[in-house]
Every structure is written in C-alpha cells, then in structure tokens.
Image 1: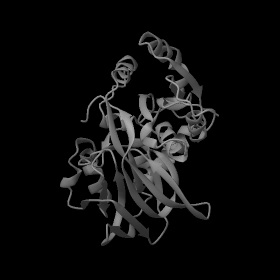
Image 2: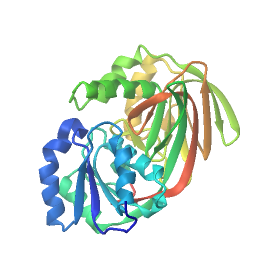
Image 3: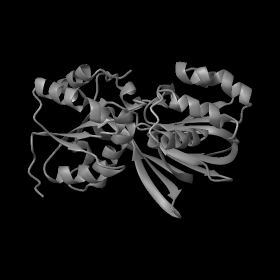
Image 4: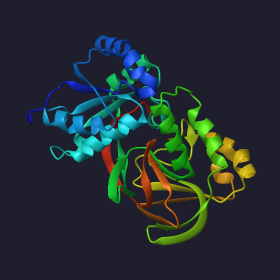
Length: 314
C-alpha cells in the first residue's frame, strides 16, 4: 500500500442500488464521466458492507476523491469506510454522489440532481461543503456497536418501517412506493413505547411513537422529518413524535412531506450535541435507511468532518 496521493477519482459503484440500476445504468454513467474528462478507477461492491472494506484500501493506495454511485445505504458505507481508516483525516477526502437509490435523501439536502448528466456536472464544478457527521452507539448481537451517519437516523416506528422495507428490497421488490406501503402495513401493529431522553443534560420522559435524529432534513424518500436541520451547524436535530391515535397519524402523514410536521401538537423538536435514548422495550434503529440494532442509543456529533460536493443548500 502506498501513501502517495493520486489525482484519479475512485468511483465506487453499488450494482444492486435502486433495484439494480447501478448495474443497468453504469455504461451510461461511465460514458458521462469520460465526456466530462474524469480520470477515474471504478470498483463494484460485491456484497452488503463491502464499501466499508474497500474505501480504506483505496485511500491507502492514494485515492483522496471518491464518487459514490449508489443509494443512501452505499453513501453510509463509504462514510463509515472513510472514518474507519487512519491514513488521513476524513476531512481530507472529497466525496461526491451520483444517486441511483430508491430514497435519494442525502442528495435532496444539497439539490444534487437525479439526472445523471446534471449530477456529473455538479461534481465537475466541485463546490464543496464541510458537513457534520453523526455517530450512534446501539445494541446488536449481544453487545454495543457503533455506526457513523451522514443524513438521518430513525427509530421506533421509523426503524420498523425501514426494517420491513429493507427485507422486501432484499427479496427483489422494485415497488417505488415500498416505504409508504410498509408505513401503512406497520401502522396497526406498532405500539408506542415509554422512553427516557437526555439531550445535552436535559431529561425528557414520554410515550413515543417514532423519533429521528437528523444531520440532513430528509428520510424515507422525501419525508421532511427534520425541517430545521442544517448539515453544518454542529447540532443534531431530534424530532420526537409522541403517542398519537392511528387516525391522527394517517391524517398527519402529509405533514411529513410538506415540512409542517412541527405544527402537530404531539411533535417536539430539540437540538443538541449529545442525545441518549433508553426505552422500556428494545426499539429498532435505522441509519441512512439501513436497519441496524436496537435501543439503548447514544448519539454524538462530529462537526464539519466530511467534505462533500454540493449543488447548493436547499
């Protein structure tokens, strides 16, 4: 392994992202990168979590610029690979994205187009922002594990919906409304849970239906669960949706899409640098759309620690 820096881009492609759009559309994307004069080396992921292994390997070979061709889960793996390596500081890596996932939530914050040519133009222009990164400790396989995230973590009801959605994706479902379908089917089986929340020393006890911790504003394919989140303000945005009737939840789902969720009286929004969450029974966690373990959770923020290529902030 060499620590000599290369000018080449590492293009990391998830062929299975967006129900195999990575595989189907790579020739088109490859041609666009050539047209715009990119000098790059392409690597395909072969399995779940493979990008976490590949990224440190290629940083060790001198790569300092990465383009992710995949979805939010692929971006999450790349971010975890960047933070796992000890060769350079994470902020010394420049990260761009051509989004081909089903949710495409990370790029929404930065107005990076889903059109491939326009996305490549944004990366070529090279406008960067130093965004915050979150880190969460959670329970899995009988112990405590950690994961970095670049967009949003959801838990409780949100974690259950993501778990069902990911299971359907792994079975090959290509329904673009998969998240909404699972949201509806999970609604009547999920019960609110008593939780204890500590935000920078402030204690809250509540019966909670769903919660999210945001760096960015969006999750679930365009839901605005953290409408006030700024990705570079050094704060985690916590949205707490307290116990509601099923009818009230159905009525207010539209508010998740138009950014008016804060108007619901059962919704509380807080910001902080350290968030601890404990619950009476284990509640499921998703991070950047990927299903992980269960509570208790400890969230912390690493301010301005990831250099990303953006179009502009929304």
